[in-house]
Image 1 (cartoon, one colour):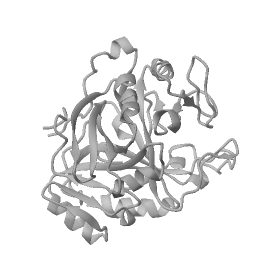
Image 2: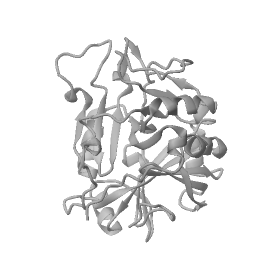
Image 3: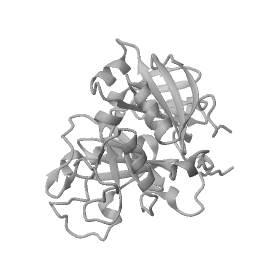
Length: 326
């Protein structure tokens, strides 16, 4: 049965003056967009589309490129993959080069963006514009070229570079089309993905993360416990259309090493998808040369070395307390 994963308007949204509507997209930085596109097509069965194909076309402006990213729709997730060497705005490279692929951050569509901007600043989160300049004005900044309001938190104040923008029509995102619902799982889906289960953020400052996800943005804690797969103490927050695992990993674990690579900032570690059949997912992953580091009755975790730098999770069930469970 088709369903719309978007939740009802949360309590307190009217008082805050804004509502986080849905995740915009995860951001993933890679050294080779073509390699990433071929991997998503082969492993997820999902085609990708370059950002520059959504516009009027024509020659690239070397001062403000639009060919720096590609978008891949994976069920209810729109995934943005970026080549930092191509991301040039006003003639300036915005991100450092990466030698290996890795997740970098994500963002949200927000109704009432100006109120969200002010709420974040009032709670001590520092804000930057598209060029990375700190913003101190009472109004949110706009993108290069003007018009669309958009801003990011600084990693030093929020743990990650979180992006915020108003809900807008975007050719790369079918979810913003009127009447969109998440369709039934396709028999042609090689992994049998039902929906995104949750996103994993590694943090040593859980209070800071909760101040952002719950206090500032209006999320709700739905579960707390020990993640034995990750070897981490975790708090799970439901916000808009998604669930976020805020995990503090044990010292000496692979997750701790991943967090330490960005310390004291947080690390966007992984994305989990609920699938209809773990055996079906496992067969396809192995057939595509994706190594599996954990396999149980409940979960598959892939080796990031063979999966674009991400330890993807495939799970049989959603997190306890997830209001999207069906």
